[in-house]
Structures are given as structure tokens and as C-alpha cells.
Length: 162
Image (tube, rainbow, N blue to C red):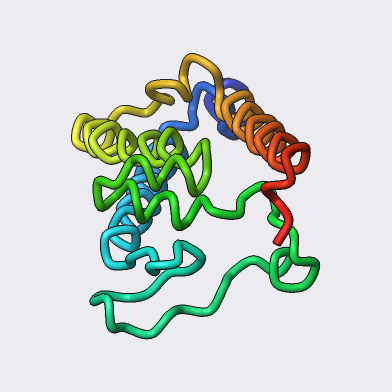
């Protein structure tokens, strides 16, 4: 036996991350499905300040934002959940009014469902879509910057204060 035949295999590297990428496709698909399902199960209350489960007579769910509850000021993400719920029910005007970025982010989540299902069905072991063009970190960073820019606009106009 030669030294090459007895040496241990090299540790997995970037060229050998197929199963990791498939796991990412699966996780993103499951999270996206959960977000869409929750958005369809919930509804925005008549005063547009909260969420309720099911029918119009259902009890209001408790608020989720501690910044809003304690400091009486919206955080960069305030309104996104309600915006997703409105978008899922086809009320795009309310979705945009609740959070300017909500409908675009909801669309990004929706697109993940067929994209990730396709990747899993075809056993694709590489990033797809915007993830492959921009890279996950660049896309995530762009979303964070957009959220803070939107929040800055809300602070400047006074829309973030309650």
C-alpha cells in the first residue's frame, strides 16, 4: 500500500457541501411553508393594530414587539407580520400600509416554496435563485439595510411613534 492509499480522507470542504446545501433547501422550504400557513390562518384585526386567529369574533392575540409595548415606538420590523397576513389574504393596499417592505418580503418567502421544492426534487446541491447570484449574506444584509432605512423614514415622519 502506498501512503496515498492509507492516508485519511481530507475533511469536507466547499466542494463537498452537497448534503449541507440540501439541508438548507429543506429548512428554507419548511420555514417558508410555516410562514405562509400562519399568514393564512391569522387575520389582521379591524383596527389594524393586532392579529387574531380565525373568524372576526375571535380573540386578539397578544402583541409580539417588546419595543412597541415598552417604549411605545415601532422597531424596524413592526408591522411585517400583519403585512404578511394582509398579503396572504390578497389585501395588498393594507399590506403596504402596514409595512412598506412586507409585500416584497412575503413574495420572497413565497418564491422559496417552488424553488426549494424543485431543488430537493432534483437533488440540487448548490444555492439557487437570488441566493446564488448575491450570496446569502449579501441578500440578508440588503434586507437588514432596507428594514433600517424604512424605519428611519418612519422615525423622520413620526409614523413610528404611538
